[in-house]
Image 1 (cartoon, rainbow, N blue to C red):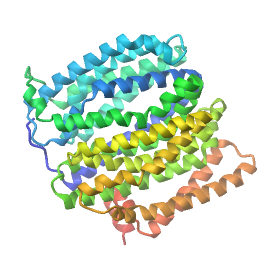
Image 2 (cartoon, helix red, strand yellow):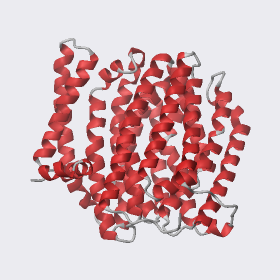
Image 3 (cartoon, rainbow, N blue to C red):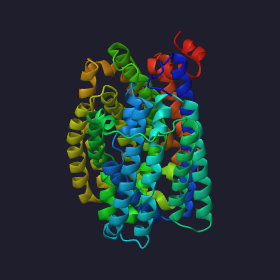
Image 4 (cartoon, rainbow, N blue to C red):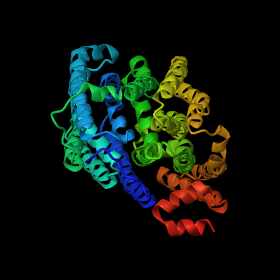
Length: 493
């Protein structure tokens, strides 16, 4: 391995999207199945406790753990093995320090949520910092070198272990520990696999000069992630701390069901398109075209999933986790729209990272964090549903402004984005109208929830795709071209 980054051809990019997309679809479907199985074996409070612990762990990880070094390895094209080794050893030190801080602070968790196992759970999960730090550089090397197949194999292997261990422990009556041990087992498998596949072996080299050379980029990015934590996790922390484990269980389950399809699109974007676009970071014309078209493709993917989740929230809950989770229905409706806005607008911030403008990313993080936390706090006065409404209002306010800085760094105007989103916006509106109409028809006939899901989602998707195909939507054609160039040509005729 050397400091030169490979050039990205169209076939390489298409192959990467196919590998990561197919893997993530399989993994996310598996995670959905895992969530449904565990939801029927565990109680909402178990999910609430684990969710709150994971939020605090994420906070410690952002504050101390992930200082932007992995992103530097992907973004910087001229790093040598010696520089990456310095970053690796720095990650190990930070990971160990994060685990130590978490262990010392663990008794405080008993004041955050009332549960007999919360302190012990937090102590066990704290070791995930060290586990993650050992693989951080190796996974970044795989992404930097566009090793999509290896990344896909790692994802699948880690998930399968998580699934087997988690379900096995839940069936054996381990309760919330099935969630914890399954997750940690998958993380260990990912760490071991990243060392096997990457080929990178850190030398005994550590120089502060190597860290100083990337300090501005990584520190700004780390500070942004720290601030952005309050946008991404602040809602759940407030729900758990003020409304209790049961409320957080319903909220986190609703968020989890919505996030499965969205995470697939986000992971494909960040693991394939971001490393690829990083190689065009100095070619504004290519970068601009890639960003605009990829935003359209992301929208084509996430719009049907989020809008159908909002319309079909009740039959979705009855068909999957079961009747005990019905209080999550209004939360799914709100968080589905939040997820749509967040996924589409969230890609804009990555563009600042690609261009190395993490300073602008940090400024945006401060502004969006204030808006989001204010909305959560106000919504908290009306309970868990009020927090979800606050999240939705915050995202509605932030979505359009979130593109301002990113569009400036690629020297284009915000209005250039609308043509990429116009067709999918109209198609999404038709999807909502058709699926809502069908739901009213089948709901009144007494059909079960599975039939309602199949009939309404099929009708809505048919209307959605029909509009996009009839209008020769470019984003849909770009998406189809990844898997079948011949089919894409037929659609474009």
